[in-house]
Image (tube, rainbow, N blue to C red):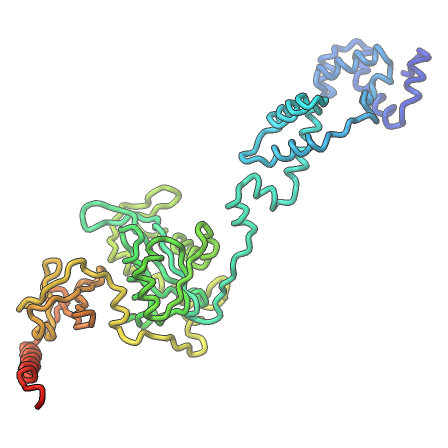
Length: 462
């Protein structure tokens, strides 16, 4: 097998041990063809070689002997040209461009610049290596370049820590459109919005509101009022005025009405940076819990884009089921604090700061655009009649009406910017007003009017 030609023998002897071994291994694979005239196609198939490779090896063996079967040295070995800094920077910049370019496009662009500068274009292999090295940089800069600023911020920016140290120090408010189809009052169906206020320290829910209407100042104000007031449900004790209400920058949260009420009851409003949902991680995490543990089993829920069951629930039924869900949620240990939200909220005998009066919270209720005049039989609103003994003394007077759209059984009336009374609808609440109470208020009002007339008719020097 050794070459007989002196030049070929000398070439083979000059190879390294590794290259001589490689040449022998290749010869052994080709030997049936070279010495026994076995078809090269068969030899290549049995050796697991591409036919074109086997043909090239045979050609090199017949020209150069065994030395030809060793791997040929690069013609430019020891003379590889260093890629200029200018071309390297261009290749690296293109490799981090958004959206990402393919290696071929980067190679062509670098080649055009090299020719324009009178430089020899680099090889494709050289540019390919630059691309691989560049995109293998630490993950932070490549994420910024390839996925954009928002992806980089979500993955690596430090979250501004507003970790609460006690209950009611920080509340977070937010909206989400739930993955559920529900029935409206008419035959139509729709996806409700859920507005929630959560206590940052305990992860307990202070208030919520389902509505088919898009998020607005009305929904936020109603949830805040519910959150602050003491609940009638003994299993839902979270209440009081927070020190800070942390919200996003939506127009309903930044409304002048909400800011005025917050100033009156001494709540500090803080708005998150636009687009930084991670700053409100508590409430976003709760919305995920709602999707996974509450909505999935309801008829009309949306799971992976498909609706499960016919939509049959109304907002009233969803509200009732959500309250039952909150009982379980408040009693289950939180994955982060390892303590149940309700237990953590009331730990240490915490006593919340309450509003000076319920009338102060009633300012959060929506106002009827047009003032109402008190009639002899009460006040009319939405085709219903509302009465209260106090109205007997103000027949003919104009009042401002506020109400809770979730419960129109009673309305709140204000006279000359002062709270007057709560009037009830007998048909909705089943409550009645005794004639005796009406007569008593009427008599008291007439007595006040007589005293006023007498005082005005009395000479000023008496």
